[in-house]
Length: 314
Length: 248
Image (cartoon, rainbow over all chains, first blue to last red; front, side, top):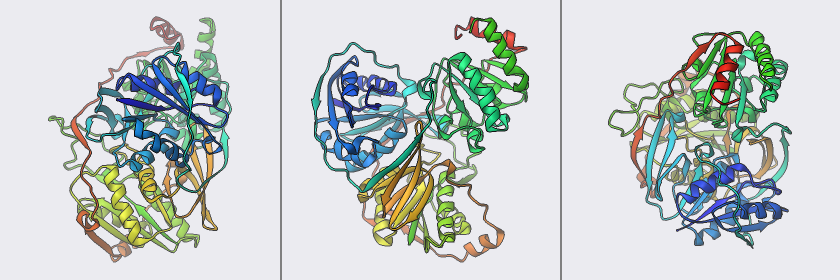
């Protein structure tokens, strides 16, 4: 069988989520091609060709692909599926937006957020905010899958796949891109970061979040996350949200500051390797899953921690 | 303008989910069920559009068991005008749901379908996108702001890295994210009024679409439990432990 991975990229390079999706695809078949669709995405296509295990890169150029809108991706991918048995997307905002649309166009049931490939038609995926795992077998001849990237290691480099230009069909419906507000940051990307520092409602204000959480994150070289409560309260932007309906992360170190640990937050970070919780409420549910809990007011604990980290040479 | 709002009856947001010992699913017996939170946000948005005079009629549709009537009643109490229940005891996949909703759209001819981005049971996040594809309509998923004017919806979407704004020509599908609004609680008089609003009960067979499953659930299991760790007394001890664990 042949498998297509739809890449996420910024034109210059391919996102780590794509390398992880390639790993999942290689568990299905050794014939894995990567589709890079964009406007001026030649460098990204070349980068995709360097991912280990990739057979071929398909490169589609067009203004319609600049923002990754689902209607354009559908128009491109659906005809290509004549040559493939499965198509995989990273379960990012872009992947989750496009994949089901393509599944419906192909008359198949999409398989969302797989975290394990049992065999080429059987997959494990979380349901009920990760409180249960279902093992499902599909009877569809074509498979449309999104991949929970935290569950797969990133495919390495060293590949030398060929790059082939493909032409695209028209977008399937009338959509106009009007603009974007993307948060600029020098910090690592939240979804793939090795360390994450998250703040919760206890911060009390956007200023406090900025003054407490961000310096600690920078000290650790970490990405910044937030609980839903902190985002809803306006202390942190929406794309910081870690949880069932936000980002799912699994860093080596997750530091939760002033986060009580609602089920939906835990769903987004419980697979982290080491979890640290700082909370003044000793009964907060976050302590039940934390490897190291510090029962303390963050107002004193975070500066102390900064000091200790400095002593440790960070 | 008519708006269709699909709503789903799911296990209540606050209920701790338990996997059945025989691994066939999760235990839903004697468990509190409620409207899916994202569906509530979609209903609220529809009601606000009606209050602004943009929308003239809100039709709430649910696909589920007889008790899903209660979910529709909740939508009616919030301000929807009438309901449609497609009654089935089968747990339908998003593909089947999208096909049924497409058939409802063919009958009702709404200019906008407002729905939740995902249901908190299956966590698929698929039905809206699938409906859009089947109808050939544009989609604006994960909406945090919706403005309707001149036959178009301008929708701000929550995406990785920030926000994106799309303009979609109506008719279109919009799926609601968490921060689109805060749903209201229905007032007692509105709950009483909702009891008199009509609900049309249908069966899946009425729509002549194939709702057979494509996916077979082989088993449902509990995720591996994460053992709790230790409490540390100070930031100094914490840093020591993190060094020992090799994560600093």
